[in-house]
Image (cartoon, rainbow, N blue to C red; front, side, top):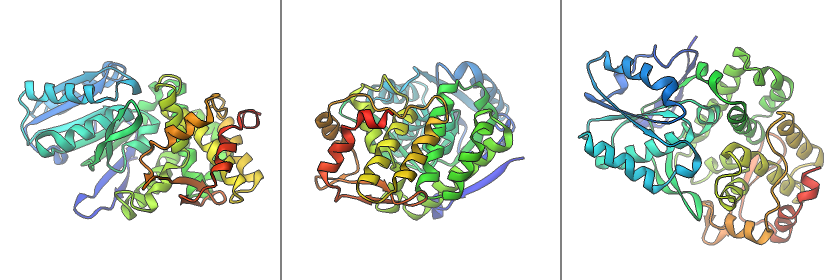
Length: 364
C-alpha cells in the first residue's frame, strides 16, 4: 500500500509517497517537465538501482542520462557541484530538463542545489535510498554543499516536485547507515511527538529488524512531523529551527573530524545527548528525561552517545560557524521536556562549556 503525505506550501506544494517497491512502479510522468531527464546517483547506489530506474524512464521515450558521483560526505563540495553542472552542459540539458536524485542525503542535497541554480532553476525529484534521507533531508527543500569551515554553508531553499520513499531499498542499506537514519527518527519524538517517542521505546526492536509495519510507521510519523513544521516555516525564520535539535553540536563534531569519523546521523545522535545534557543544566529538562533520550539512542546498539574528546574552545568556535548564528549570537535548540523544543540565543556560556567538557559523564 502506498501512503501519500503532502507538504503544503501553496504553489510549491508536493507529495511524499511512502511504500514498498515504488522505485520502478510509480508513474513519474506527471513530474517530469520535458523530454530530458538526468539521474544523479553515487557509486554505491547506482549499481543497485540505476539501471532499473533508467529503463523505467526510457520506456516513455525520453532522453535519460546519468551522472554517478563518489560516495560520502567528504564529496559534498563545490567541486562536485561544479562537476554535475559541467556534465549537464556537456550532455546539452536545457532548462526543461528534470533532475532526479537517486541516493542518500549527500546526493539529494547536491542535486537540489544544482536544480536550484542550473539555468536559474529546473525541476527535480527526490528518490532517497537511505532512512536518514527518507525521513529528513529529502523533505523540506534545503539544498547545498559543505565548506571546509562549516556544514551546508553554501546552498538554497528549493523544493522538489516529488519525494518517493521506497521502503524496499532500505533492505540493502548497511546497518550503520540505517542506524544513522534512526537518529533522525528519534529526534522527531524528542522535539514534537512524545507519543511517538514512547512508541520508539517500545517498538525499537521491530524497527531495527525492518519489520514492514514498524518501518512504515516510523517513516510516516517522521515525514508528517517534518511536513507540518516546514509548511509552517519554509525558510527557517522561526519554528523550523527546532528540526536542528542536536545538529549544532553534531555539525561542529563533523567539521572538527573532517567529516571522516562519523556519519551525519551518528554526529546528530551525539549532538542530541549533548543538547539534552545542556537542557538539563539549564533546568529545562529533568535528569530522568535526559537519561531517557540517551538510553533510547544507546538501545540502538550502534549509535554513539559518547562525544569525541575535542577541545571545548574549538567546539565552541566551530559551533559559532553554524548557520543558526544570528548577529553573532549562537542559537541552540533545546528540549523542554520530551515532545517540546525551543530555540534560545540566551544560553549561559559557562553551562555550555560544562556540557562541552562533560566527556566522562556523557560516556557513562
